[in-house]
Length: 213
Image (cartoon, rainbow, N blue to C red; front, side, top):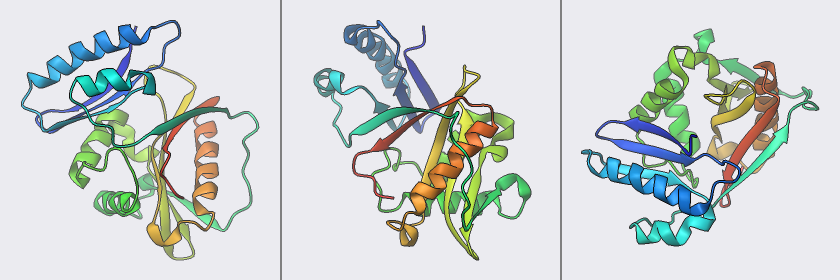
């Protein structure tokens, strides 16, 4: 049974997310994570970032971790999700109108001023983790959004590895000058439609409690 999803960039970082499983105790999770953590300590790796349920807070502190933010996780059925008329234009990186490097810079811009839990990642690290997670077709999952001639945000929808219908967003963000104007909500809605087009039947999302869109 898979208890953690781990993205490893050797000698740079590990990103570890707890996988919620029914009838698995907090003690079992901590035991499994401790084994994973000991494996990480044996590597010459810069840092480890962990997304763990709040019930394990005390044990994580005892292991030497410090809490940097709180994440709210939620699910949503996609059956009723539909396209709404919008002035926001959707573009895919696969179209070739934006370079990989420009997309990486857009990611960095969208991260600025946010509580993104992976903000320690450099642009190059982000691109490597994106390609590692999504595979050879990663560009097909990379979308950016424009209002008029200006790029206002991005989203990276995909089907969670090991599932056939669980939709996730690898990342979703809004350019700072376009925040707090309802654009985040509009882009998120478009991203859900894109997930539905990918045959996702439900969406699992998470957001930092300090995030503002």
